[in-house]
Length: 345
Image 1 (cartoon, rainbow, N blue to C red):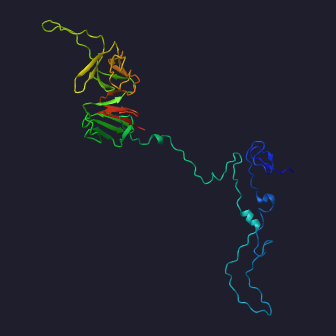
Image 2 (image 1 turned 180 degrees about the vertical axis):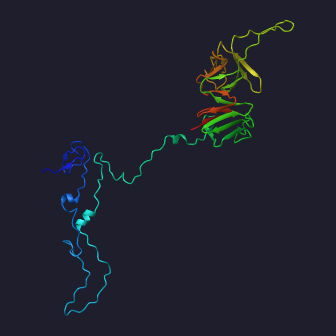
Image 3 (image 1 turned 120 degrees about the vertical axis):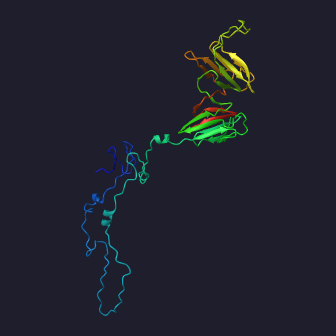
């Protein structure tokens, strides 16, 4: 008869001292053997009688001993402890629980580490999306770094120079009550409260403009003029006025100067007008915040709108909002002289 350890996976017989199976490399863990399998009859032995103690075990008698002739009588002493119950080795072996394997026969992982550990609970994916989000406004400093952060934890927040929850007391380009930021769920909206200088949002894609809309390029405040020219004609005396030749352009860009009044007016070349620091239709060589090729205006062929596009500028192009607009994560806003970044995450 050949002795060895049988693999629980493939059944291959390995040496007694083997740790893993020679055929499938599974970890060998010998299964516990019941005592009845080694010594028949040990699992179902007859009950032990109190009068006949099992062999090899000395019984303790509690009856008084018979008097010996000629011996002095001894005082009886009460036992201090009750007699111990005698349990045979066979009874102990049958009462002990079977030993459990400590290692997984296939993977070899310890089983003790898995016992007593609570099962992991599966979370719903939707719970991550239902967490409350608090939008924030981050002030951008002159060097481009982050300044003060305002957490919009309430429903409405007013920004102004002297009124509201967010104040910039030293910014005289802000109206006393300038803009309103409203939080609805996880969404953020901005509204101009009738301020003098307005609220500007940086564009991320081409946007349509109407006649009279204002936009920022560097430090230049510009206005779109797309109204048609008046037809020339004589006065009541049938006299014509001297004028310059009228350009064949659909729209114009007007520079708005500090203190009021208009500066340069540049007409589009056909249906396009480019803006930048140099080599454009409208150049601002002294403006250090304007890129070489900053923005472009194009007349839409299917509507009366003029399309404004940022052509990869460093500081961006901003459009003055009309009414309430929704803001998104990463948007930039100009109010007064304050540049703010929106964070919704």
